[in-house]
Each structure stands twice: as C-alpha cells, then as structure tokens.
Image 1: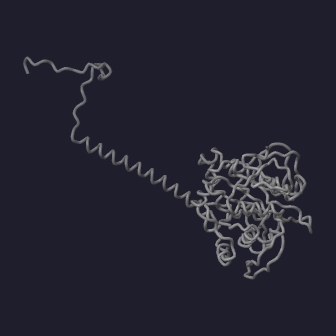
Image 2 (image 1 turned 180 degrees about the vertical axis):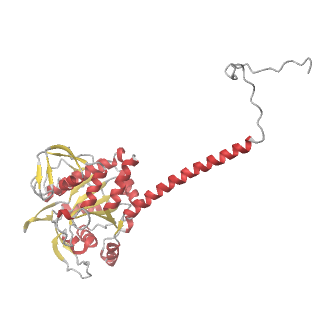
Image 3 (image 1 turned 30 degrees about the horizontal axis):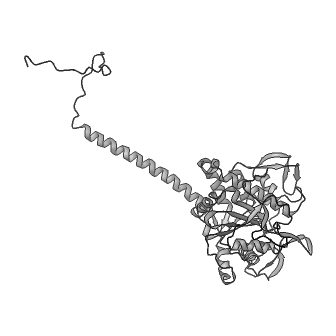
Length: 401
C-alpha cells in the first residue's frame, strides 16, 4: 500500500537465515500439523507400553523360574498331621521356629562322589533356627548328630513303621525322613517346628558359589582325603567343593570332635549370612539373581515356605536383623556317660535354653565364654543368674576373627 511503513523484521542476531541475514518469523501452523503431532504422541505412548510390558514379561519369567525351582515336601506335612495332638501347641507370638536339615544323601547329581548311594540318608547337620517376634534377633542352635535321644515310632518309605527307641539323633532322618526328625526335635525340646528346609551337598556348594565364596582363616594346612579337602594355612576364600569339605571335615581340623566341627559350621554360616546381607549382594540384581536361583534350587521345604514370596518374606525378616543379633550356639552337651563317641544333654542348661526359645525370651550368647560343652556361664554357680549366657558367636564375627 503506498505510504505504508515497511514491515518490521526480527533483529535477534542469533536467529539468521542461510545468508547470515536475520531469519523470517516461523510461518503459522497449518491444520495438518496437529494430527501429525497427535499421531506421534500415540506411537510414543505405544512404544512406552511395549517396553513396560516387555520388562514385566521378563520379570514374570524370572519370577516363575525361581518359584518353580522350589521342591515342596508334602509327605512330611501329611505325616505330621497324623500326630497333631501329640505335637507342642503353636506359639502365641509372631516368633517362628524353622528346622534346617543338611542331608548326607549320596543320591542325585553331584552327590555320588561322596560315597555309594545305598538308598538311605542321615542328617549330617541339623540347626533349629528361632526368629524372635519383632525381628529383634535370630538364634541358630546346632543339634549334634550323635546326641542320644528318644526317637518316636516313625513311618518308613515302604509304609512300615519303626519302633520307638533310644538312639543317636541323626538316625531319625534315616528312619522316617523329615517328619521323623521334626517329631524327634519337638519331643526333645517342647518347641513347635513351624517350617523346615532340607539341603544336600550339591545345594550347599551352589549357594557358596553364588556369593563368590566365603573367606576363612586356617592356622595350619589341611589335608583330609575323606572330606576331599587340601588347603594351605592362612586367609583364603573357599568356593563350593572346598567349602563343603571345610564344614564337613572332622578328623583333620582341630581335635577331631563333632563339637568343634559344629563350631566351624557356625562360623562359616555366620560369614555366609554376613556376605548375603551385604549391599553388594542384595542391592545388585546381577549378584542377587544367582543367589536366589541357587537357593531355590537347593532346598526342599514345607508347603508354608514353598513359594518365592514366602522365601522373600523370610529373607526380608533376616535382612532387618543386625548381624550381631544373628547368633549361633550348640545345645549344651557333653560326652555320653556310656559311650564317649556319643553325646548327651547337659541339664538343666539345655532345658533352660529350650524354655527361653519356647517363650521367645532373649538368649544371650558370648564368644568369650571358655566353658566347655556349651554350658552357660553360671551353670556351676550355686546361685544362677536370671538370664544365663551360653557359649556361641554371632554373624558379625567372621571366621577370621
């Protein structure tokens, strides 16, 4: 239009055209760009949904795999139901008692190298694990395999029944499996067993390997063909086969007693718990999954602990307990008066310990106690204290302490 002022131009020096002159303003949006924008947003949302669903699918796959690894022992559960009336009553608190059984079976992959499979098995290691209400502490009590106890009449695999007899404890597992062992422990202690886990040699080795081994210290070199163990003296990290030999060796380390072997097992398990509880394992998925995979493949458990969720809840409870409150001790014992190769309970110390566990009272354990046979500090005192202290250790102390 004649006389009209020239159209003003943008003077921002940072916005220029190809010739270096100021660029023209962007043209107004046309009607076609809005549909394209909506189309792009829909594809972006679809892509995100696919990623989320894929991640969920992978997570579900691993969950199902771990869940299916677990073997459920329904035979023991049904057998225990037959004897419900004679079992100790369930506790009124939130405390739980779990029986951990290490089987010496030679059956199965990787176990035959330890001897000929004769179709029988005994409990090489048995630990009563008491988880206090409120997740305040965990107390693991080793029961000697050579402890003389009353074993009730138990049902064998072929359907026949054994007679009630006074025999060494680990025969219960051979006579009637897990159910017989649980009933024997319940009669001995008066403590209701809420759950149980059984692990064999191969499962133990895989658990140790999954955490990249456990550190131990040896004052002297070890050469034990029976335990398939040959180690130099000093600090070292043991993996599967060596770790199994270390906890099973009886004749070549120390004085050769089963009591010392149980103490070594407690030290090793404490170090294993300490390592699993470390952030390097539990907070690292690449390290945690192998541990979970090994653990779920290694155990046979009752229907109350046969899912990944159940085991996760148990692991979470253990995780919340400080390592110095995870305690290990051996039931007060001494050599059996009629056979030095067998054990018997020290009374009233053993009964005091069982009573504290039944009533979910604190159990005090100290590694500084030099008394023998697991007797409490005041066992020989004419005026025992209200809370006796037992010989033991906690998971905060490594095997090299």
